[in-house]
Amino acid sequence: MSDFIRHMPQRGSLRAREQLVRIHLDPFLLAMLLVVMVYGLVVLYSALDRNAGVFNAQVVRLALALVVLLIAAQVQPRTYLRWAPVAYVVGLGLLVAVLIFGVTVNGSKRWIDIPGLMRFQPSELMKIAVPMMVAWYLHERVLPPSFRDLLVSLAIIALPVALIVIQPDLGTGILILAAGLAVILLGGIRWRLIAYAGIAIAVAAPGLWYTLQDYQRQRIVTSFDPESDPLGAGWNIIQSTTAIGSGGLFGKGLFQGTQSHLDFLPEAQTDFVFAVIGEELGFVGVVALLVLYLVILMRGLWVASKAPNTFGRLLAGALTLVFFVYVFVNIAMVAGLLPVVGVPLPLVSYGGTSAITLLAGFGIIMSIRTHRTW
Image (spheres, helix red, strand yellow):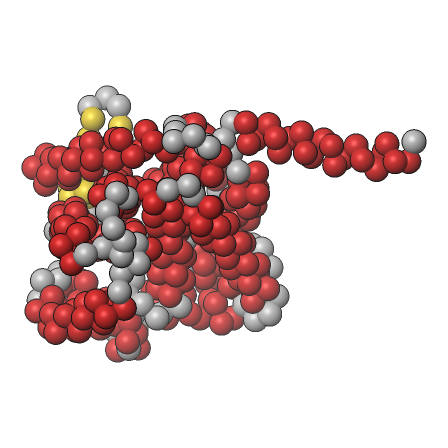
């Protein structure tokens, strides 16, 4: 009888795992994503100052994102391979349409309005379409890529990035650039070419400086010396670093943060929610979140390493590294190490668009993991 009782939870757990795998979900990865989402909702409830209406809206958004993940996981990887060029071309067409018919909000033209239905941001599609297209191009070619294949891959990346940066939307442009470059790096690019690219970027930097918008240049300058404009462009960084530093080891406690709840911290529920974590949950809360992120990254890269072909390895690895870029850029931005570029903290910041895109990517990763036939 004791043996029966001891084995019941194990068999139940095994049965649940088998059921998840049957619908093409990775149980471990899904569990880690859900833990981060719950963690984020707890922090967000505090950052929103217990605003139940906005909080419930975020719950609905995350539920929708999970549905998207489930749907993406059902699609066989060979379907993604077959339709990658179509998704890329459609995405480019939508980006051009944004420049012509797009809706301007706060000086940026990033959205298309569908009358009576919705407003959506086509650049989000390219966060998946670009790495998928580069992986499609490289999957039947000899790796590491030749110089010609490298140039073609860079052109595939550069075209949508340019269309997005002129909207202007530097944050999304950086994420899409990182997504495409991740595929090239995973393809085994030679270190010598990486060194040449670094030199070329350094040489071109002075010219690129003058292509930026005035507010973008101001953000870069202020990131080095926020005290030079403490009541203007430097305000965000000063308040976010103050919030993080004031949390100490265990933080002030949920709902007890002064920087966020007294409105010193701007955008506490979106781009700067990491500062809320640092202030209210302290070093321990920050480390807990970073460990969760690290486990997700390791699982994603493990799935990529086990993929049965080049397309799966490149795509799963790139989508995982994009998740890393989200985490790195947001935390570095809030800590004052990078300019403020409007990149949310994955699955924690308020908003549904980035969550849907990220979970769609993880759905593709799960599809690559669980589909055995290509």
